[in-house]
Length: 164
Image (tube, rainbow, N blue to C red; front, side, top):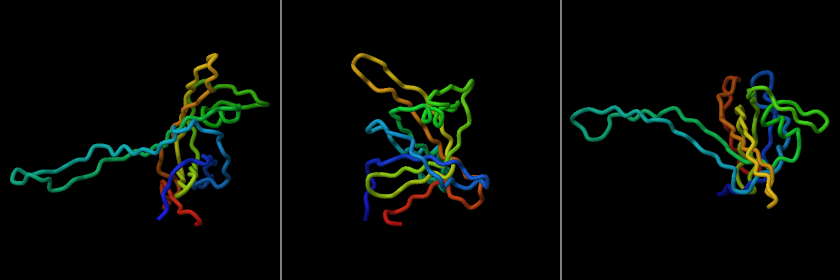
């Protein structure tokens, strides 16, 4: 049995024209320790009951939303363009006029354990930086919402055991 813990890297890849998951990954840089989290919002469960019983007859699960959140330690214009949109030209980031739609395949590699791949994720981000004489770093909060892949029979997420 392998336990999954820690974080080695987070990588992004362009989704293929077929709608399938990307295969050419690039690392997005360093993350602030303790900020990368997978979460599931299970939605509202709908229970059907009858007068005669104290337990439900059936429990219908609600729609779930799976997300990965992290906080990047931003060091370059290319990373800003990748997670916030806009453009990066010769080391200069130009912000977009409105929030863009950014979809990528995302791979999360832990220090140990299963490697997680989101085959189609919606990327949103925001600047979260305190510039002070105490020397804090410039951070960008990033949230990846798992979406249904466009290529038929492609799972939303895959988790691969070490050595596979």
